[in-house]
Amino acid sequence: MASSTAMQGPALGHGSVQTPQTTTLNEVRHEHPRLHQTVLNRVCGSTPLLTEARLISALHRCVSRRMAAAGVPGVQMSLSVGNRPTQTLAWGHANLTTRRRMTETTRFRMASLAKPLSSLVFLRLVARGTFTLDEPLNLLLEEVVPHLCRSPLTARMLLSHRAQLPIIHPPHVPMNGTPGATLTEALRGEHGTPAFSRDEPDGTLYTGAGWMLLEHCVRARTGTTFSDLAAELVAQPLRLASVSYADDARMGPDVAEYHTPEGVPIPPTTSPATAATGLVSDTRDCVHAMRVLLDAARGTRADFLPSALAQDAIAPQPADGGFSLTHFVYARDPLTLTHGGVRPGFRATMTVFPTQRIVVCLATNSDNGFDAVKPWLGLLGSMARACRLP
Image 1 (tube, rainbow, N blue to C red):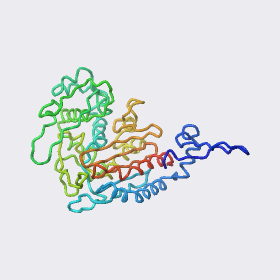
Image 2: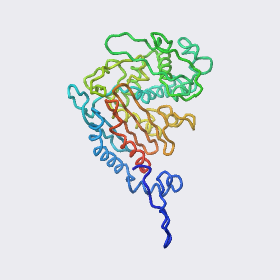
Image 3: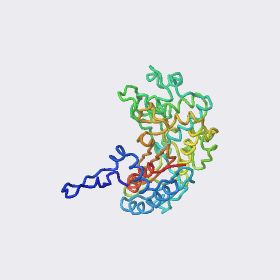
Image 4: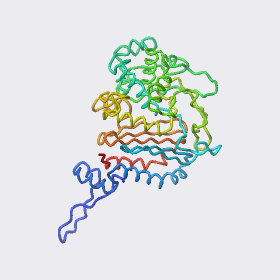
């Protein structure tokens, strides 16, 4: 429900000619939190089952109609509430030219939505003792970016976008045999890629640069490609059948095509920045990976990550910062973590409510994809606040 929904104020005295007062839900939330919770519970339902059912019902009511209005070819969504099984829904087409349907198992080239899952790879290396979050990585970086190493660079800084790096988007080239820069060349500013600097006044600028530096450190210390480590440390132990960082996975027959506003498919691209933008996955496996992270934070998946490390990963960095080690911090009451993926013809978003154990991931194969789900995303926040778990 919208936060501007009006509620009648106190009853007026006999014979009064005053205009009734109105109060927004946001005002009630801050001034009368118990009343706010009661209203949300009555409107939205307070159990995981009711929350899930009403969110899915709202999706079915609005998505197809809004897809048609906005010219969105296809949408896939996965939703997990508490311990409920993950639900995956799909609408429309994965490819307009061939009329191939969007299904629950269609995969996407996830762009920056790679970063939350890539962070799990690095956290697993921390759990193994290969890295620590706060060790300086300068010795591993001096060969390629010596000008960035005048002061310590740590994994915690890079994961939470606090290394004072510029806003840099990883380079992409068409998958047609055109040679592109290697990761090392891109870091050095060769082959037309921008040179990195470290003089941004704001220390929390979202950038792909940090993940390119982390990927270099991982390869330098382990001698293993990020793609192979992602398979070994995340995809295989969590049984994420759709997850791959391998370049050839981007051309698979089950991968959605992206489309111009006119509905013309956009050819896939590749990038040397595997950790920052190389993920291919469906939305279900993205949700499952984040569910495991939340379970680890509660101490029930110590086989994957120690509880203290998982709790650190979902907490704002620092306590009042704008990023966790895996996501952007969208709100703090309730704690809401989010991340997006954007490429020409593609839009995706993942939102995590750690306290309520709600995870949702949406992917669309159109620049206008969010137009099909905007009302539902607003409803999601209100229902997350209302959801009480056992």
